[in-house]
Image (cartoon, rainbow, N blue to C red; front, side, top):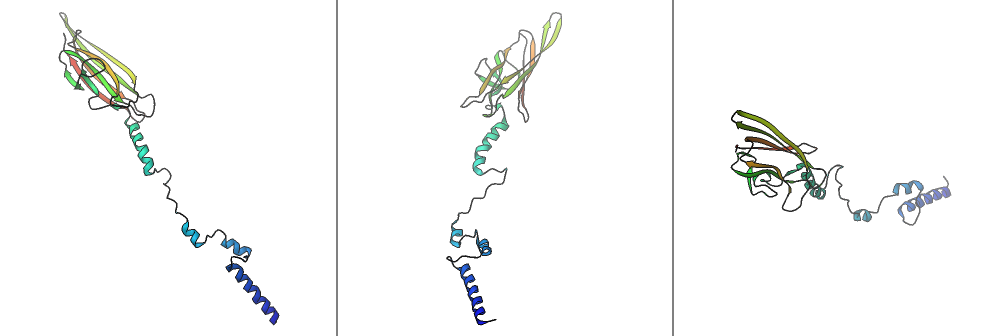
Length: 210
């Protein structure tokens, strides 16, 4: 190799090295492609680390704090407003004068009723309950005794209520003791309907003949 050719080769190599290491000189297409998109060290260090997103289908703690109470309310469906909300009360009308229970046996003389005070979920529409009774009345006469059976079955719509009172179905059934038509014994069923499974509340009472 001639001296002039050797000098030319060394000069070309020097120019190529300068192009890769200098911010002012241009790099070759292949070198530029390799360096494209690589941030300077100080730039990479200054970029914030993004928060880890929840897996698809999972909820964040904030989302759960909002959603969980609504789910619990929906799953509960229509339910008694309190411990003395469904059953037999002394008195007849909107208010319960004295809560006697669900299975009360033979009632003393007076006026009574089956009633319910309920809470429905805040979400959803057409929440309903079904109230049904089955009664057997025995009437004694000089010629002997006769027994008859009667029943009732009716759906009631229940709305959500805010505050210190629930939705009142009062009275569902009026009771008078003693009974003019003979001794009477009854059972009652309140069914709170729910797409994921109904809840059933039951009770009974009896009254003597007058």
